[in-house]
Amino acid sequence: MKAAGTKLRTLTTLFCVLTILVGGAVLTWFQVLAEELEQTSAVAQKTIQKIDTLLDSSRQVANNAHLLLSQPCTAQTRTELERLVVSVPHIRMINLYKNNVLFCSSFDDTSAINRNYAAHTKQELTLIEDKNISPGDTVIVLQTAFPEGMITASFSSQWLIEVLELLSDQRPLTLHIGDKLIQQKAKSTAQDKARHIVEPSQKYPYSVDYPESKAVPLSRYLQQGWLSLLLTLCLALMVGVVLWRHIFHRPSLYENLERAINEGEIVPWYQPVIRSDTGKFYGVEVLARWITPSGEIISPDSFIPLAEESGLIVPLTRKLMALAGDELPALFTTRPQPFHVSFNFTASHIQTPNFIEECRAFLKRFPENSIRLTAEITEREPFEKVNELKETLIFLECHGVTLALDDFGTGYSNLNLLTGLPVGLIKIDKLFVNGISSVKESTKLIDCVIDMAKSLGMKIIVEGVETEYQVAYLTHKQVDYFQGYYFSKPLPVSELAAMVKYTYRIPQLEEISHA
Ligand code: C2E
Ligand code: CA
Ligand code: CA
Image (cartoon, rainbow, N blue to C red; front, top):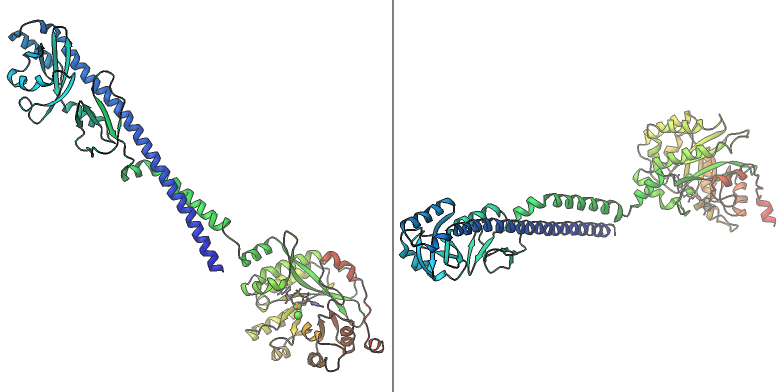
């Protein structure tokens, strides 16, 4: 059950942590993608501005050459054209056309130009390959029409590639002129992918676009998204820890018990012990009760075994002693003889180095000689380290702590130990009392136990007396004290006060037999 619970807790926590991690990674990816597209769009706008500036200066050159259109193509005209070419760094050639026929050029060999440029004369902007003038290079040709004719100014497409490469460091931009295109060499990507077309230039017939794909290179993703990824990781870890430790965590009985001890939910109740000769109150056995915040009272049978197994019994008993030390002194004031106050101790607790100090601290809470502290040790468990235990018990006796052997007859009957021990009291368990009835032979077992205890010369408390007959019979057998529901159940301190001064009538066997 516990393993299945832990597995479910692990899986649920892992699922939540992974969901946060994946969610964070996807959001980061969206964020990086959006940033990249936004930056590329801004770069494309800037690229268009730069290209427009290049074309503007080409157009200006054409305007400057306008007057030459109305002149014949003389050596002087050509010299003027050459001067215009060198006046603008990127311009390579200026041609003058009349009626769509080239009549003058800044380049010497007009026959070569005729063949190539004449075909493009109808487009304002063209991209052509000119093997004769600049082999291996493409050339941009800008036409400017005038009433007298037309002027073309051309420059190498290398200028545009440089603009593209200079500005765009993310998505490769592509420049479209007519049905031709110019691309950044290093970054050219497949053309069939979806592309985003940037708002075209207002002045010239070309357009710029870039791939619209949702892919983001891993290096860029990590570079731009590291902070977001780090925050996601921290968030996932925090949520994981909170879920694991607090939300999906059902505290074990051990953890609950430890918390209950620390928060004072384990409290002492007191069961009166009555003298068989006078029926007067002799003292109490302190019994643990777990009272939950909702008021539920949990019996010690459900938590003492775990407390004993886990070692929590020691802090638990210390807490009971502290609380009893707060509650009892006010009740135990006037009395000629000391009141009996007994606690159930485990052998391991008794052997802790501080035990004597704990007993002394408890005794100090009471006026001197107003109580007799009794340590009940059960013989349900076998005693270990017998010699050491003997020494400790003798030491305790010397410090005024009486010893009582609990559940006598039910367990290991450590009789050999008893002979050498300062045990002053024997508690006969309810188990033996249950059998007592007026039926002949029913008392054989308890008779035997009582005789054994008496032979050891010890005082006897009989636990679990419930009926008048049992009290009468045990009084007849001359046991010393009673503890049982016939007199009282264990009580909280508020109800104990009334019991202290109360005297019970002890029924006698003869009365019952004669009745
Ligand atoms: P125990 O030490 O033998 O305590 C006597 C038990 O018998 C108590 O049960 C008491 O309520 C019950 N009892 C007394 N008279 C009668 C009766 O006439 N009829 C019936 N039916 N029961 C009666 P409780 O308080 O439930 O304690 C059960 C056991 O839990 C105790 O047995 C003891 O072994 C253990 N325990 C309780 N408190 C402590 C503690 O503070 N420390 C340790 N180590 N054990 C404790
Ligand atoms: Ca006991
Ligand atoms: Ca008992």
